[in-house]
Length: 97
Image (tube, rainbow, N blue to C red; front, top):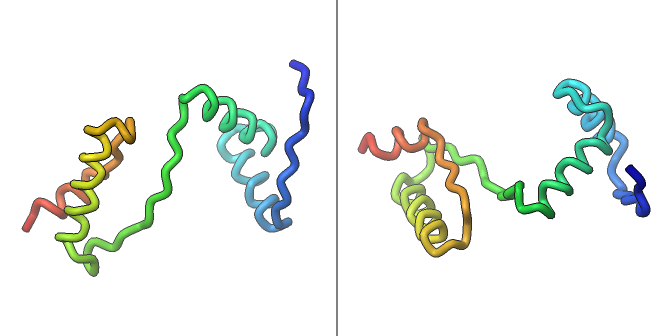
């Protein structure tokens, strides 16, 4: 496979070391291999990237959490997102009211 472009991303030495360690732990030969896999799957629409805040359901308002889920369902039905990710534990905690 011939590569015509090198992608260079400045990162801290600490992050680079953590990436190398994690790559080896999960069976990749390098950080570059992970980047190629992610980028290839992203452009082929085989990867969905989302950013989700971790929520503490004990201290969070359950009504707010229910609204977040409702908004996610609306986006799913409108085709704005293709995947829903709600953990079973979050779901069970919300319906225990």
